[in-house]
Image 1 (spheres, rainbow, N blue to C red):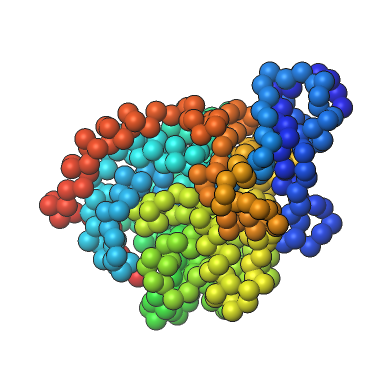
Image 2 (cartoon, rainbow, N blue to C red):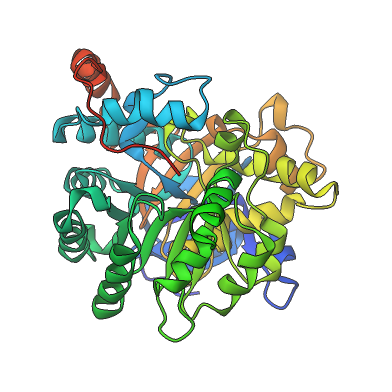
Length: 458
């Protein structure tokens, strides 16, 4: 062990590590009394606490009684929509969009988006999320908030065909302008909204832009079974097959595609996803599916068999009411057990694998984050295990998934920088955001104008 000064050393924790050579979904293990050494924003080593006693460090954290995990990744959200939390409740999908959300979103200003993003980032930091994939309007403001608050993000400027060519061009310009921003913490994607709001010609054009500029694509597709049935009735193909015929999931040219939700993915879609040349991943946000009473959920088991990574997500707080990936982790395990009729799927270790390595792969950051391993960026969360609801610990994986809560996260670290220590946010002022956002809500929520950004008609 080198004795050169470290930037940060965490000692006394129980570290979640990934064991090479085991079955992919069982690679979770725990290292007791571990120490994590961070230099230049990178994990330099994961070793025993006794081995770092004499190593100097600019900052040390005593994490006895805590578990150290790779930072959680929210693989699909609309962060600024926290401003609409609770506005559209107990509605079917079509009414949710057409009667409330899309009329309200026509009022959005850059300041509304900025304040929503600030509040969302604070919520995610406090919940142990270190990276999020966002797909929304006015994304320059979100990128600025990410740069300031210290999170990592995968960002795309959404567009609809109803905007004409300008929407598509704005999405490209945003992706090129912010790629590699915030000291490398920002990655970007092209962001067509969905096959039911973006015409085939625009999806094909997006595929050409993605290949030309080496950009991934982040979009909604086969969100629910109704969308799939409507696509089959109108066009004779599923939404996933639309992505194939427009070149986004082509077998000849690799384009990396992140698909949000996919609860309408059918058996006929699986070969399409499997033969796509690029990396294809699906982000699953089960809380929203339950709220909308959708009859199906993301087919994690079938996607796994097809080699498609499934990452965990929350969607926006307007539908999900929270940005709590901890809750998404527990619900994913429970809903999959129910959907498959099998209590052995997903196990706690399997869902932790989805929350860490699979989520990192889903957003194109495999090998960069998602693991407490030397060479990975130092995105780390420390979780308090001393509460009565987490004791005794017989199976730490089960404790983390089914007993621990996002409020048990004590410390959140991104790129070796501490963004929250002992539940105190260090990079965001929540009180001022809540105060100003409250003042702006009447104008934001006005629906008297009769406008909407789009019409939901799959």
